[in-house]
Image 1 (tube, rainbow, N blue to C red):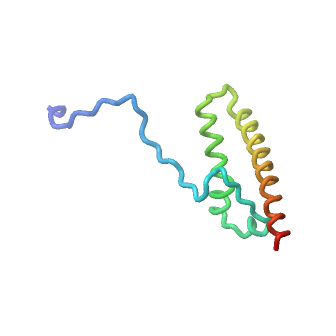
Image 2 (cartoon, helix red, strand yellow):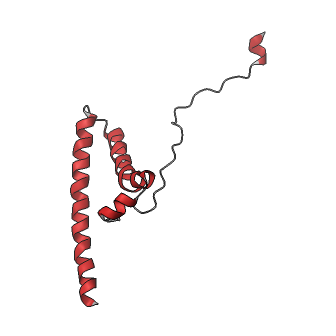
Image 3 (cartoon, one colour):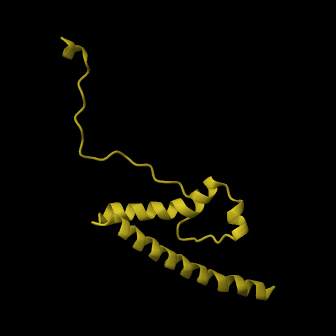
Length: 104
């Protein structure tokens, strides 16, 4: 009798639940350079949101996609490559900034 009053449960579908994508204030391709003073003045939330979380989200998404046997090693390699990539972006942006200063 108790089964008659309970609504029928929906069958589970094979589709995973929708996942919200993180909101980013700036595109990932644009590296913002902060001074030590600016970083020190940031709140913990702002520091994590702008400097740490975007990179970690990309790294974790890559781990999930690739499914390596040793995810910690994979993450360390991914983050080392990301650091090199960011250093190259900074080098490319610096000459542009110096040429603007020279014109003034």
